[in-house]
Image 1 (cartoon, rainbow, N blue to C red):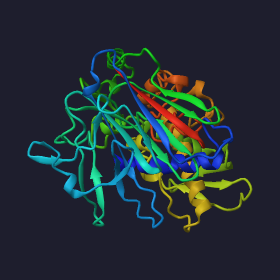
Image 2: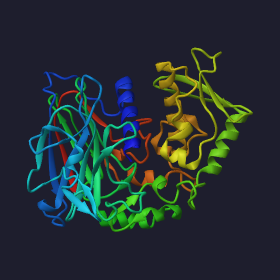
Image 3: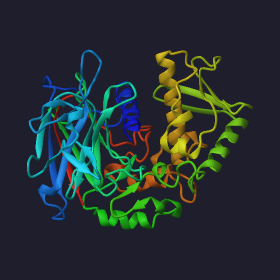
Length: 414
């Protein structure tokens, strides 16, 4: 699950820096002190006491040498490097795990310095999330968090959720709620800044967890109902029966076939914040694109039709920087084109580029689309949600940014 997060976070940062996307903050009026205060609120309406709500912040240190080691935030807000010896604070099924968590009863606010690729983890109930520190293939320390696709994962009977964020040295904070992987419980996030910035995202206030589970259990199309894993979570399609080899693995295939055939017969032209692009599918199935300002050069491509899984995850041929000769601009353009088409496929507007920016046209009734994503947009503040990895496209994500952050308040609902 971490690899998808890091890929998406990089995409978010690049997009927001390049385009001032989503919810842009006014210009800071005072120097920022490179710290952010996080406040955690028990919004479970008595379902869980403060000593049953656990939080932890894990991420990477901003190091000048570029190593960016994995760290956790202690109760004082200091960054502490992870160590193999941290395993053993918790045990389950004979395995040793860390415990980087605090309860709201112990600490319900903390001031955090610069941190990269971070998650704010929450769980409710008797235990925190089981995290294990290990070494990656390069011998570097890393951590294994919850993996909802692993039938032996120790967190399958833990109710958890998280918020994603980064606090880079010069840019303030980037932070968002997410439903890309799963839903554990309602979360609301409010971000405030010294320059008057004040925005909120997440599930709408007053929407209970029981109501969400009940609504999703009767969702249309019925194929998506299998994603309810009560009582713990609702999982994203690509983590459930829409995976390769599962019963719904071909859910979007026919629609993708139709799109590829349409653009074999005619050209696709669309305009985004990076320019105007025209593409067409060749006899070899490759979707080739040119840029209006250099229309004679085949600069960008999607190598083949994506599978349903690739469309839902935004990976594979929809996250492919090859054939760009390592040129940073070309890489960025190609990945953006792939993200545009990925979003259009999830929203079932790929055949009508004039509607790519029209949220009212997304997820048409009785047409195959990412109904899981639609569900969260329909229940989120200002209809902003990360229902899939590229909800950043046309500013449908709950990504918040201010250059002078003061406080982020996260309410854990139920």
